[in-house]
Structure formats: structure tokens, C-alpha cells
Length: 441
Image (tube, rainbow, N blue to C red; front, side, top):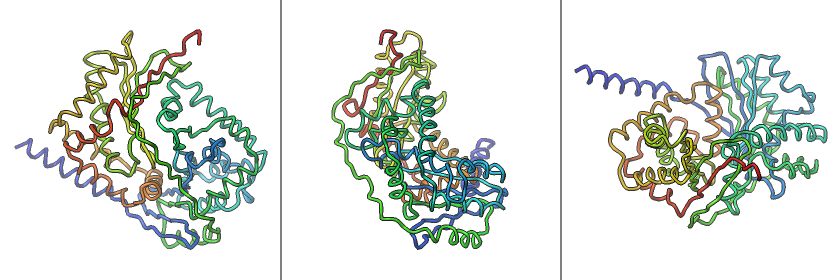
């Protein structure tokens, strides 16, 4: 009887928590094409203003890699009404915080302020969109900043070429610009002329290529009026032509070796090209990742780390992107374990997924894990703002902030087996040995 009550209580908790996580929002377009999403949350006196632009590293021209990420830095330099170097000072002086980030597919800027500073956040983002100052001194300054970031995050970071895909993507893509790194090359940035930076801004930083999100303690009607005042006068720009490049399927194993000056422990990786983030199969691959390496009771961790003690750590994840994803499975060798041994062990786990249905117990645990993720997601207005922008821009469906969990709930054990057979095959992958740099190399 106690067990039945406990199960019912747990079910009630998840039902209540899922309901409590419902994110209500309003969305509409301005006449200039700017898509606006408003989310009212009165639980704390804070507000996040975020603008996501549909431009990322994949939109760069050949020989000019790194532009999208460079703008993430450059557009904090100043505007016609914000003096150079004052952006961060203004935010801090008003009790706020701000940041930006870039992927292959989009660039996102945001400020979080006390809610009585909402108008300041809207003004600053409209300034960034309408008339930033793009000059040579700003380009030169941020060029040095980006170089230091590349040295810190990639060149001198252990496993940096795995984390940022610079040692993976060139093998997986032949024509698609996903083959290039988000941070780009310093040679490309050094060679770029000022007029090229101005042209990049003019092409991609228009209201009709952006989504504005305001989330937090707001009055919707007042917020709409402020948005109209600050963003309404900005003129639309010519429609952006989206990247539309199809890669030929990988039909035989790609074998490669990458070296890293910053590591002592070698790693073995299998990498597979997978569908875009909005495809149902991408969700199934997320679940496969959880089966393989989510926690100490996961299959790869339990077998390779705990039982056989051949791996120091294991990993499996689907790096979702708008056009294609990359599914990565890997392990760091324990002691003198050969990479071939790790490869065989990983293949054994893949074979299990391809030939056997996961148990009912595993399936229930999997569903519980994703229910928990849903309950814990969007725990701040800052996170909600980013999620709303992402679902709108990259998935084309803002409602997914509430409905995405239903996709995971609907995935079956049979579907997991089917997707493993569809994508995780030896002839469709990169087999990568990631090694410490030899002393004589």
C-alpha cells in the first residue's frame, strides 16, 4: 500500500511540476519584420531583454571565417549614443548583467536588469541594432580579444579541438560551412577590411532577421509601447538568403588522428553526421545519449569505467544544429588501455542498441530523466528568454518551450532501436584517435 501511495505521489508531483512549468507568452511582428516575444513573470523584480539574430558561422563567406563570432565582441564597442567602452559600465551601474554568444546558426545578445530598468535594456538593444559604431579602432581592439579567446579556449585548452569541434567538423563536412569553426581563423580576420565588417552588419543585423524577447516582471501593454518606440523606426533590410547546402551521405569509415599539446590521456571518438535539431530523430538521439552515458548507472559508464576499468571517462552527445547535427561517442583511456579496446567496447554498446530493445526498467528511467529535465528547465527569466528565442528562430515553433516534452514522452523503445540502426553505423562515421602530441612532432 505504501508503494502505491508513493508512486501516486510521484506521478502527482510530476503532473503538478509540469503544469507549474508552463511558460505563457505573447508573440507578434512589428511592421519592419522584427519578431517580438513577451513573457510576464512577476515572481522576481527582474527582466531580461534578449535579441537573437539569425546569423552564425555558417553564414560567413569562404576566406572570412569568424565574422559572426567577431561581431559578438564588436557590437559591445559602442554606438552613436553610447560612448566607446561604456556599454558594460552602463549595465553594471544600473544593477544589471549582460553577455552574448554565437553558434553556427545564430548570435544572441542579452541584458538582465532590475525590472524598473526595462526601458534602458530596450534602448541599448535598439542602439545596437540601429547604429553601432563600427570603426578601425574597434576592429583592431576586438581582433586582439578574439585571438586571446582562441588561444585560451582552443589552442591551449585540453581537448579543445573536441569541445569546439575544430578537430572534428572538417572531416564531417565537405561543402557545408559547418566544416569551419565558429571562432574562425586569425588569418581570415587579419585579412578582412573595415568595409567588409560594415557590409556584414548591413546584411544580417536587420529587424527582419531578428527575434526580440522580453521576459520577466513587465506590464505587457507598456512594454509593447516601448518596443514600438525604440524598434519600430528601424528599417527592414533585404531578406537574407539562407544557407542551403546538402552533403552527400558518408558511406565509408573516415579514419583520422588529431594531436593535442595540452593532454596526456588519449581518447577514442566515433562521430556520426545526424539530422538537424528540429527533426524527430534528433530527439531520439538525445535519449540514446542518456542511455549510454547519463550518470554512473548508464551503460557505457557502468561497463567501461566501473566494471572493466578501461576508461577514465566516457561521453555521448548529439551536438544539435539547424541543418545537421554531429553525434559524438567517446572515451578517455585508463592507464595503458589501447584505443582499439575502447573502440571495441563502444561498438559493443552500439550493437546492443541496434539489436535489442532497451528494458522496460531502462525506458521508465529514461522517461523520468527527461521529465526531470523538463521540470528543471527554464528556472530563470534569463533562461526562458533564450529558450523562447531559440525555439522561435531555429525550430520555427515557439510553443516547443511547453510542448517539447511531449515529443520525448512519445518516443518508443522500438524507435530507439530503429534510430540506432539508421545512424550509428561503422561505414557512416569518423573514427578518430585523439592523442598527446609526440615529443618529436
